[in-house]
Image 1 (cartoon, one colour):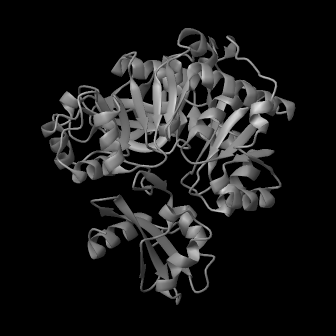
Image 2 (cartoon, helix red, strand yellow):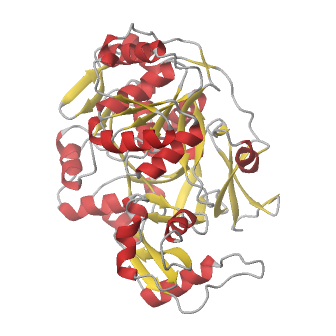
Image 3 (cartoon, one colour):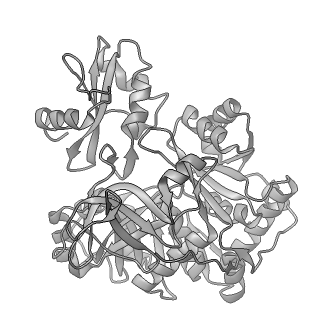
Length: 496
């Protein structure tokens, strides 16, 4: 397997302020920051953080939606030597408080629209809250960027739920993001006029990687506050957008808005979140939209494999070939699988994260001899194309968001009248899957979704709740056989 490359990395924003001073770095909400602007704003914010005695390696949490503030702190926090820790703005106060406590963060920077939930979460975790729009960030003694950042120095901590339902903070280094950007550039190329549209959340690795890659390349990140299909279509036609990252449900909604061409500037749409349905790929082909299906993880700083448009229908369902920075193998009982044999997808290379924050046990379990054991099942065909057979058997992908049943089940079991429960996904054409809760006990089914909204993000709350007669199926050791419940739900409920 390839050895981890360890070289010094330069401060991307500082470099681009020298090489591309007047080039647009970030555009959002009618405001454009050049690389000179961004370097200045990053420098004063980093100086203000340093004045607060932020230590090397410590996570600094940020709670914000897509916007200029999160773009600023995504660069400013790592410039101090600390780790940028974006929080999912859709989480509840209790979920946020867990991540703050688990990470041992001391500071939470929040934008005004999230001030209330930020104060609630911070009070539970004993963390100080700072206003992301405060004048403090413009008054700090500027901290300049360096050209000698160790590649293994932490850049970000991004929480990702595990199959046990306990979220873990993946530690992504400067080198992880750099080599991910290099691999993407070797796959897509880089043009001086590239404008990558970020309409996915910047607190997820898929959105954040757009922001960081653009700075590494010296190109422009166009940030939308939220995904609005008509607005995205307009941006493709009128704003010179050349690259776009979405999931299948988002692209479907874009196509449903109108049948007009999406502009001449668009040269690639990266499509994540699982295999795309044939009708969507055929529609993209007919409309001249170059779709590249991808497979990636938080733990690999986004992309691992990508399928080019010309193979979209020939290799239907494939995530493509491994990018230059990743080596992919399929493991079955500790051995390399044969072509076509389903096993666990393992990834090695310089984009594999440094591990999980404060979780040496989870790190040792997931990363062995340099190989990340993803927990995903898949196979490689005779030509080396990757197919993902299942996303961690129990994982539910709904609207591009990952929902782990164990976490939802834990919340359900806290409700009165819920004796047993199982949470599964039912296929849905629009969202991929809908979250379904199967309940044993006398709880009133109609009131369960509203009862969960204070404890769970909205996308995790079950869309359907049904009652199960008798006891749920379990193994002899008492482990829930969720796959049997899933099969039952899909047979009896059909498409959600």
